[in-house]
Amino acid sequence: PMQGVWGATFIALEAPHGGGDKVLLPPSALEAIGVLTEARHGTPQLPNPLCLRVECGDGRGTLGHGQPRRAAGRGQGGGGRLAGLLEFTAAEGHVALPRWLLQAVGAQEGVPLMLSSVDVPRASLVRLRPARTRFYEEAEDQQSLLQAGLHGVYTVLCCGETIRIANCGEEFELLVSEVCTGIPPTPVEAVCIVDVEALEVDMGESLEGEEERIAQERRAEETARAAQAAAQA
Image (cartoon, rainbow, N blue to C red):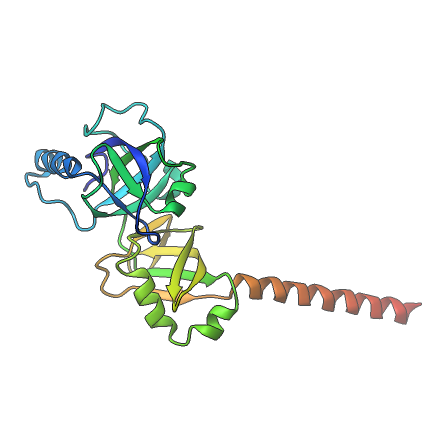
């Protein structure tokens, strides 16, 4: 378990990689996390993957750079956003994040961000809904697209967030409508999708399709009411 093992403050930079949810930490963070992990668990080996919470601010209530901190709860309920780790190659004192993640925590380059280690349960079921109906029209092999767009790109999926998957130069937005862990699947706020042997991905109705369906149903109801009023007149 890594909940509350490590926490530190870094200056934000926009990462050269644009998609996914993985951040870059400086090499000193690897040493700090290893020392704290060994003190807690008897081994400096980091878990794979290492899940992180990213929060805008200077880490009020922390014990300083690289020192242990009590992390917030899982999912979005604890504040900030969850992310994964790409590698330890950022400039010292800095953390590099994809632009969307910077925006999600309300930050920009040059501001302090608090990062802390967290535990996130492994996924068993993820329900996604594409923003546009054309996802079903243009993505012929949806399972392969999801496989390539999720694995190795995202570490954590949070219920209610929108993810982006690239396909042939285009980007598709998908709403994460539900995430579950365990068998039978139990809904939670966030799940880790790394090293999951049998992840079930369920694709639901597109948000655009739902809007169109609701509009059609509303028009049909209005037409029926108008016809009924005319018949009674």
